[in-house]
Image (cartoon, rainbow, N blue to C red):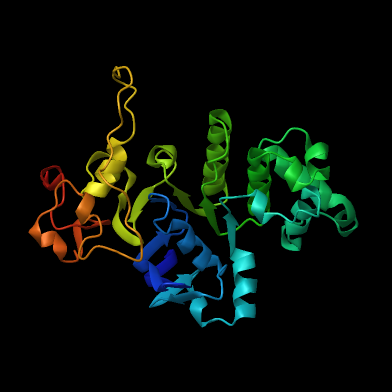
Length: 333
């Protein structure tokens, strides 16, 4: 049974130039226990989708969808109070900018202790007095924080971005959620810490059967952890498939461009060689091209690309939106 089922999610934002559609009819289905990678350039709408799921919206946002089911419950039909209670029990999110998400006037340790729910307590009733602080230290140890006392007594501005990110991950795993949304969880960390955090997320998925939506702009960073990968461009989903298919034979030119931009260290790279990139830049949401939004930058664009492509399916679970897909001979074999 799908743990997350979204159909035709549309997010519009009121701006000084009028209403802008930042996410256009996005559909996403994640099965229970699955790790789904959501990849795309900065500004493609990945974080907006995550915030819409947990209900972190602003007054100028307008969200509509055919359905947005989480744990077989359509959250769009819940009252604001029921939705907050439901989200708090089932979903946790790791935000992209951790320092801005903490209360600057409260020590980090107090905020971590407050995030630990009563339902995760295991022990006798007289042990409840000190278990929160002890459990908070154990959570910091799990995410790789060694000096527990110093970090818990510090304020957010006294810690580095990497340490704040670890504390936020500790707050997320303290809830023991059914769905964990990780928005760039390793962006502000060194390579060794990135590997440690990815191992922690993998352990959560295997041991606790936690479903994870892993958002990143680096496909290589999440390729080993994700079971399947979805690619967004300019507010639209352009391709979805299993990890093996997406890495070896992508059908959409944008997915292929993301893979080609990764350096291949298995071969000798020429000195000061340039990475392969798509020409141009991502268009502004106020002036979108007609038809395929990648058309002005796509090296394979033709006359038919002025029409909006429909969803196509090559193999089971592999969906793409393109008039002229790549690697179709390999898919047929």
